[in-house]
Amino acid sequence: MEFNGYLLSLRLSQGNLPDDYPFNIPCLKSFPELAFHPNVTFFTGENGVGKSTLIEAIAVSLGFNAEGGSKNFNFTSRATHSELHNYLTITKSFRKPKDGFFLRGESFYNVASEIDKLDEELKAGPKIINAYGGVSLHEQSHGQSFWSLFMNRFNGNGVYILDEPESAFSATKQIAMLSKIGSLVDKNAQFIITTHSPILLAYPKASIYEMADGKITKVKYEESEIYRVYKSFLDNPKRILDNLFISNI
Image (cartoon, rainbow, N blue to C red; front, side, top):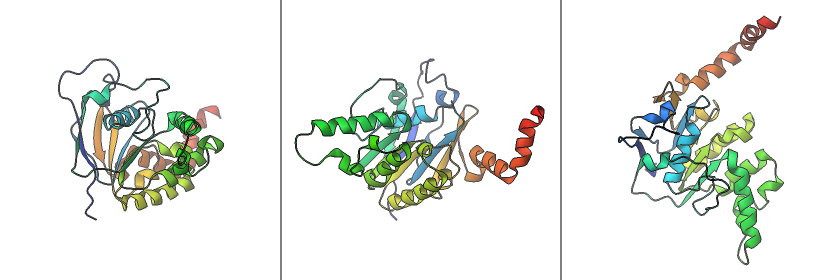
């Protein structure tokens, strides 16, 4: 219970920032110092507010490959990440993580390809894919490959940065993911996650930062837009659908 995380806070440079991307995204022009929760920190908000850009910059600042993977991955399919990481300061605790991974859904195919490539070049020793369940991630469905990574590669005592991991998971798998996150937190894992999922966002030992209206604001679960939109729909889907399609009747 004494574990208090590896990453403590995040701060954006207060100097003169460039005017071009990504600083032309309102939420990334300026924000107050953000405290990381020692267990799980969520970033949520509408498309285009800069969630993935911010979490990518956090990952790169910590030494992870921009396209995903562990810190041992250094491949580049196409260098498209922003310069935001150069303007971030991450305050760390005295604790040193022994493990870590950056899961980026949009480039996970490239990570899977890199694992296969490295294993083909490996002359001796255990295969890299063994740490991911032993079966090529390309020989599994999108959801299965994500789940194999999550269940086999993440072992605790590390920092895990996940960009919208729910994109590959059913609602049932997302609930199972909550359980796995809890077991890893018990093994001194710290997570930073961007998500659109009201299921993942419900994880109890977490801080939620909502990116909206040009600001990054800490909110409670029930205050988040994701929760309010989903609850409103599920409470009365007929009313909302009637309002949407009444003009077509």
